[in-house]
Image 1 (spheres, rainbow, N blue to C red):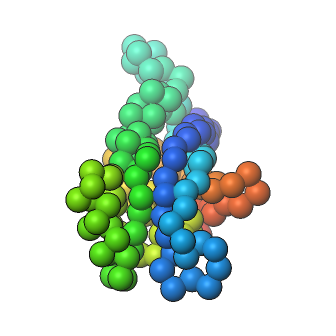
Image 2 (cartoon, rainbow, N blue to C red; image 1 turned 135 degrees about the vertical axis):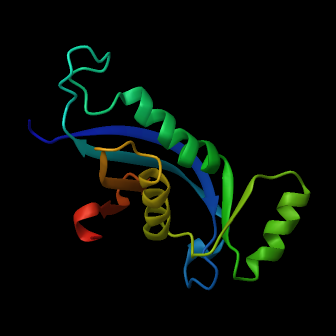
Length: 150
């Protein structure tokens, strides 16, 4: 049986700031992110399985990505916990804002690495994460490929 790749796309709104950056992105701002998740595997061949012919049910993939990424990051503001932004994060949290503290600079590049690790940890046996594409604008994106990270 052939390996097949399937892709599901997600959208979410997230704010961030890049501490120490020398451009506009040092200021708190947000993006309408688009995340494309591609997994690879062999379609189920058991005719008695309700998911016969599928690599993974799109609904199952959606549940994983929503729980691990979208529901956590949507309408949140992400800050690097090892910078002075920690003070701003604490103030926002005290005012009831959804803040996520990470141990990395919250660039698209680092976020896509984080997302890959979160998704991989939840995929069922026989299904592998093939790639992620995280778009922060229509013309700017970061990509993660399993083949580049072995």
